[in-house]
Length: 220
Image 1: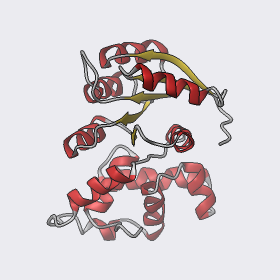
Image 2: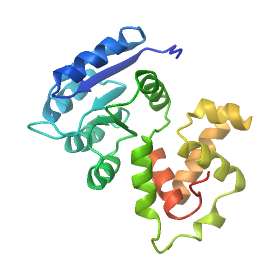
Image 3: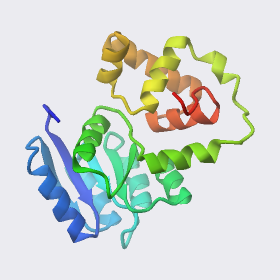
């Protein structure tokens, strides 16, 4: 995985084994720079304010302050910092609270190292990623719900739905541009319009709302 731009990362996890494993993985990628490792959410909030990282790999079950509360606090003071949940927690409550708190991506700790690197790169570029187990939880939660937003189907243009479909698959802006043969500025304009029409603030919630309101379906 070619990473041209240096990505500053904070690892927030109270498992020393996890931290050592991650740092070992990143040694092969000089453009991924671990600027700090912290063992609880409170220290993650403090480190984020001081170091302004691009990415935080955040566990959920930590002492003092858990990863979900830390994510909420960090997004208030560091809205540009993107948070990837890297955890063994896969309960429905944890998943939705983490996404609602502002997490861009949600990975399980058994993720393959090369996939994690890809997720970091994609998330840094504005994409989002849900582990297949987590994606299934999200989709199953919305199946069978009474659809109160079907009118949104006609609000989005065909091209906006094309863009939204790629957002839901975790594509970055540059990947959407290449896939649809449109300029980066056009991609950004479409995404801005999608966010406004769906009344969301980020890509993850746009994708979730798209499935909930059946603008997109599972086969997309």
